[in-house]
Image 1 (tube, rainbow, N blue to C red):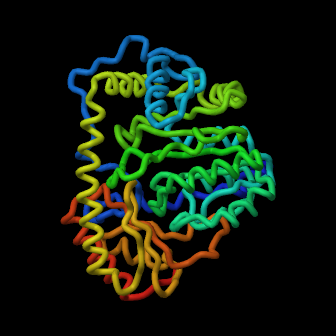
Image 2: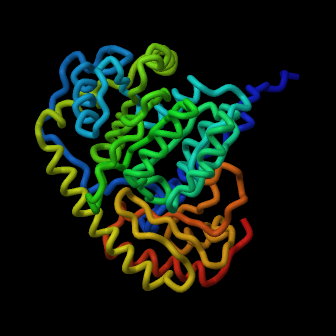
Length: 390
């Protein structure tokens, strides 16, 4: 008789990603999906006649392609964050940056301070490393800095923030909130992981959105972004930059994980950025996604105005809704898929399990206005029929 498999203790904290499971179930062409944060397929850019350099098929530097790293430096400079190319590490999407940070900083039982709700895939990673969570306050409304200070006084291992069009709520910190957060992180010298995958998808353009990391003077920091939301998500090209003291260890962790990020995608992104097409491409995305956001706002008012509340997002990819009568929104999912519509229940976005009920997230970028109208009409009927047992 063979011996039983003995998994690492950390595997008890690893849960499957609910959004990946829902996306798999929503692959049927008859299903209108508001579940994932997918860019519109028809708006993905193409580069006719692109031929990768011969070296793209060979092993490359762990830090990433030098030209792309310098281009990231220039992007960050425009945002107000000054770094050198030695502080840039090209990653396999921004998700790898979260994983590398967790490996770098977390021991079992450490505490991560984060918004509530927060990005569910980050929660998944931090849970794998057996972290505890401390609630900085709601990311759906103006932050309560008395609560923020109480959390930071308790000396968490680091803070994880998505301050620009947060996932799932769409909330963007004001300039004053960014300044206050930077001051408090400096005061208690709590490291910051700042995640900004959506900042270019800005439908209002009424705030500068200077990174919090750029305003820190004492606290160490990591800052990351991605090309997945504004270029080709299938390339899985992101980046992380950090205080100098973090970089040698981050690079060694990257080497241990996968040696380096795939070079074909790095070269494609670099050449696209060099082509000068990116500004017009992003402008077009903003126009198209603003139209879809507006269409969803209208249809939500028509179908959900009597049973839920929400704020129209000024950027990003999501609406975040709260039912007037809280219920476990996971209990509506099966019926929704059967009705030909997918959405993302809100419960997995909270770090403390099932304590928050009655929220759900809707993506608007992946569906055109006609699909949005049809899908929300279907979803309204599902909610009218009431929840089912899982």
